[in-house]
Image (cartoon, rainbow, N blue to C red; front, side):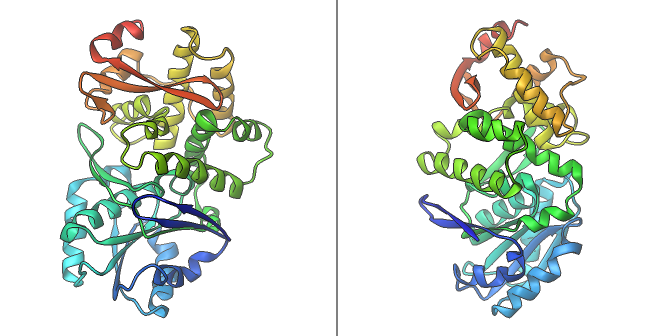
Length: 347
C-alpha cells in the first residue's frame, strides 16, 4: 500500500492499495472516534460495494446506515442534498459522527458538501471507485452541487479525514468511464508532468502509477493553495470550456472527463495558432484522446462554448481565468477581461 500525505490545514492521508476496500473500516476507525457512519452511494455502486464496506465498518464498531441516490450528474442537485440531510437526521447522525462517500465524483462532491453543511460541519471520508474520482475529485477538499446555470456553483471546501483508493474497484467500471477518468490523467500530464504524458503516449505507465502520480501532483498544488486563490487554478486546465460543453449538453451525453479533454484540445488548438503554445502540442493531445476513445470534435461552435462560460466560478471581477500551455508539462494562468474574450478568440 502506498500513502500520500496531504498537509493542508486539516491533514490527512491518501491510501492506495489493492483490496483495501475490504478493510476500510479499520482505516476509518484510525481517523475518527465516531459512533455512527452514514454511507452515501449511488444506484450503480451500492449494489457492488456497499455491503462489503458496511460489514467492514460494523466490524470496526460503527453503527451504520446507507443512503442511495439515483446515479447520474443530473442528480447532483440541492434536492438530493436535502434528502441526504433527512437521512442523517433520521439516523441520528451527530456532529461527532462521520459520512462515508462511496462512489465516483458526483457521490464524493455531494456527500462532501452535505457533510460540510449539515450541523455546520461533520467529518467525512472518501472511497472513490472511478478512475476520475481516484485521480482527481476525491483529493483537495472541493465539494459541491450544480445549478441549472452551471457546474459546482454551490459548494464548500471540506477536506476528508482519509481517502481510501482501491484500484481493484476499476475492474467493475464500464470502459467508457475508465476512459472518462483518462481526461483528468491527461490533464495532469499537460500541466505538470511531461514524463507522465510521454508514458501515456508509449503505454509505459500502469494504472497504479497514474493514480499515484496524479494525486501527488494535485497534493503538491493544493498544499500551496488550499482555497483556490492562486496556483490551484492550474488544475482547471480544460475545465472552463469543459464545463461549458457539459452545460451545452444538458449534463448528459458527455462525461466530465470527456468534456475536460475536449475543452483542453479546443483551447490548445487556439493558443497554438496564436503562438502561445509550442507547435504540435494540440496534435499530441488529440492523439491521446483518440487513443482512449474520447471525443475530439463537437457539434457546438466556439461562440456557443464561449457564451456558455458565463457564470463560470473561475470568474474574478471583470475577468475569467484561463489555463494555457507553453508546452506539455508547462502551463500558466491567463486572466482575460470579459469584454476582451470575443476578440481574443476571434469572434
